[in-house]
Length: 624
Image (cartoon, rainbow, N blue to C red; front, side, top):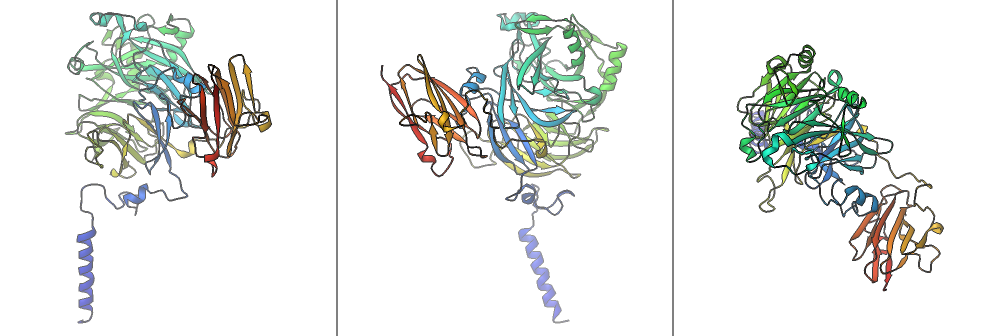
């Protein structure tokens, strides 16, 4: 007895000491397992991806006014690629070579808001991601086989496509509703004539996946409301699109007050298949090169649904039976039934008309209003695989989990701070997988080392696989996260290198075929890049020299003949503000006028081998 009592007392004291000094009693993220799927894992272990393993998901995130697409791996939250879309990028030479410069159309920035992954049967298919440029009325598309921007198109008659981008369930259309109403063609019109002469426009864009080209199919003329966010239907609602609106007051100044006076704004409910038939039947007018359909003249495919004032997000449930509006200024989520809306439309049960658009009776199509106590500023809804919805609350800085069928509030977790959008894994598809949600926060005050008056924004990873949400990881991000979509890695099939195509225009695959050709005052260079040299003319005394006359137009076609993955070469000419990259097997072209006489080194700007430093040449410009 005397022997084991001291030993047991010692063990107990040690256990108490370990508990006091090392246990986590904080209310913040825990370092221990919190749910079945991640049983026995600490938060650090949940996000740790060991060397040799890969993240399970790609998160494709908007880069806001950088005009870029940011690509992250989940759950590690590591940023793995910046894809320039609407802005030039010196790191990759995007916007400097002939093709991408032409795509940018002279713009040097864009406001990238909403990425939308192409879909098949309501599921992400991993082929392309579309994006909107609110600032310059553009739509862009990134090819997910190489993570390069494939095409950009500017749209007429638009006033900033903020409510897009969203795709219909088989990517029949990419939908781009306008944020700011403007007169058609942006003709001059006094703001006193706003209600009569200003219009909202929705662009219905198609994409040819073989040719990788965007095209304007038709546009829809709508009342001069502001169209905020939108979503496409699925399954039973697959022919429909829903869009939130605000400023149904037609305010033209002090909108933070004047555009929020009505108790209700509208969700616009739009049947794109019916509109497609009307356009095919010629029921449109040509307006600045676009086929424009006016619902006042061609009824039967557009309806309005009253909703709590100044809504923001509207999201279709995975089964396609409901659409959920987030109140923003009204602290509640409203669940509407597509089936009830269809019944009202079929029976002609309308309470009034606005601008020739029938208004459905709110009380007959609403299922419920969900009003979590004390939760303020609902903005967006995401979903899991168990019938639950997750709403970001901008003002009360939290995410609320609730049951779609009943409106029961199941859980709440704080985020830091002011979340806008969120993205759940496969969260906008017909079958979300319910593992993670990322809160895209607008503010991260005091969470990271100070970098001056402007603090970084942040993203927070939350485990939603269990009954309770578990805030797992926080990462600072570049400004400003707007929206993101998260897709399983198995759906994206990237290429390793560009296929060797000997018929590709301007390409050269053998050193002996390289050449410099003069056509009047144009000099065409057909060169190659390979470890560790440039060859512009194999037959010349110095194969890595380009010699031109002052005033010549110089066109350099460069093919990277290193057919090994990740052997990318860069091409920079000193004092010419020129730099672009050529990936393995790729051919790119750059044009410039040799305005300055002199001697200018050429060098590889993308580290490619041990002799990368030696990969160089000269541009010699002989004076006039």
